[in-house]
Length: 201
Image 1 (cartoon, rainbow, N blue to C red):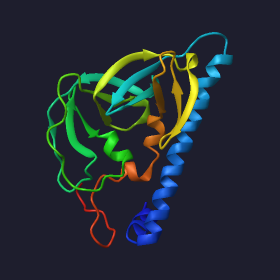
Image 2 (image 1 turned 180 degrees about the vertical axis):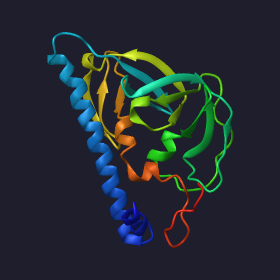
Image 3 (image 1 turned 30 degrees about the horizontal axis):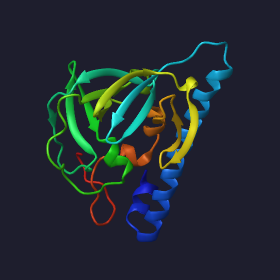
């Protein structure tokens, strides 16, 4: 983690580390895509994935990595944190960190949040307990169960390979386990000009 902080404090090195992290995340996504497509040659049992929408994109979550789906609760902002970290929410008596995935993938670094979180169909999808990471994604809509094994490979995206369903819609497999291995995902605190994270974030 210290090495990452040092890189973040330098110009060119930070860009290189940023590209390396993006590459690792894409590798996680490609591995998940391969695993989903491998279901075609399994014993005939099709594995289901949870379909979600975030912004203009559709994602597929491994059901073993996704936890609960809950209505959008109040989110308490946490000072001196990244813009993609929206704050803390109480989910059935447990505090979880809420992440705006679209901002995270866009590498947003500005502090604060532009307006209130979406309402209506918005939900939180928590990470499975087995990941050992008390976190949830803010999603615009939960679409329901989908079968990646019935889809065909489509275009590459910044997050990795995508799949196309029978209606021509594209879906991006999203590995929550891959996210929690990302050093940047673990670093929610803003950094001072010397590249040192603020304490207490």
